Image 1 (spheres, rainbow over the protein chains, first blue to last red):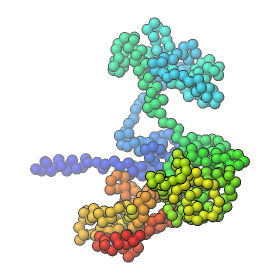
Image 2: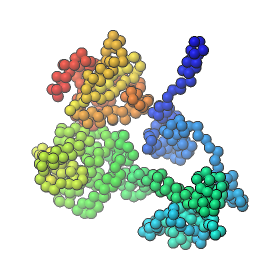
Image 3: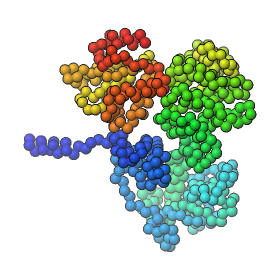
Length: 403
Length: 130
């Protein structure tokens, strides 16, 4: 009995505290003076950079943040893998690693359709027109010795880039090379291929094809509109700078997530509003700016609500094009009506959309049904204002219903 | 349909509070009461607000964002506890949020607080009157 009791005590002792992601993140964040958001889909590096005087962040610190989010199964992983094989370029003959950087002659470059896609001339042209020597991502190539003894360097990623380099007059082509000849027979057999030259080549095609799909499909993380905007802004893209100035004027800022007051998250829709035209041509954000002010002046807290600032931008644009003057008092009157009816800004757009669909289901609309929410809400705002006794002349709605 | 957003202090004495939302407040209190005898503690809400479902849900989301760093653990039963935060702190914060966001949400009058099932009928009449 005593032995059993001792075992039970020992069992209790080794029971460890279960991992909790939120707690791990909080513990990690406490090491920093300026807190920043850490989520599965994004670690807010711009906020994190404030701990480094807005300068470069050591990637090791970012790495620690990543493994904190990923969990304990990643905490103890340490590999001693040196991909240079102990050398930094200038490899000794016969002692190259399996993968290395190199410069390849045009005549030695090939494309094997087994593991490559078709080529798009218009994509080549697109890269050509925006080309800069400093922006070439190193193409990936597999070096294969064919059964007849010829050595070919087959591109498995970056073919369009290589073709553009050729157009630009390159004579040598930088490449990340997988050297099939450096793989041992055991490695090839372990991957399920046989011990012949043909099987070795098939193995090479397998590696190239798998990597091609990994890089271009399976593991591709497209550039999010938010990241595109922020990089454009911080590298002085004039349009994004102008947009940011408008946001800042109203106490707003671009954000990935709508988690703070004034957060603007719908990059593409913001650009759409910025680009709206008036009677004298591009508005350069004049209608968008007024629409943002409309929300921020009357709903002091909260993120920017897309289906409030977008339809309001369109309303100001329509009025401008159709020759209506909307005085500042109109904004105050309309906001007051909306708050009385629905309350918070999200409820305003939800309420308008809800009334639209109720009217549609009851066949109680007159006019053509808009195909997009922005025009449903825009028409809803015009109808609501008139039905609430508003006196300012507005453009006619394209569809009417009782809001 | 109206929901209730509620908050209460830890009955065991920690300086923490729980917030939550419910469409059936008596049932929710019953769940809490299950965990301890009425002789130890009567389940109650120290603060409560009511309003349309979506507005209450949105208020809860925003409140949790505001108190993100006070929520020390995630997972069931843990993510609604705010560390080192009293119901009065939460009440002050909610009042600010309702004003700033212009929520159509009303604060449950003091005469019903702390809200317990003992005044169920009286409180439900009040809810229906809204």
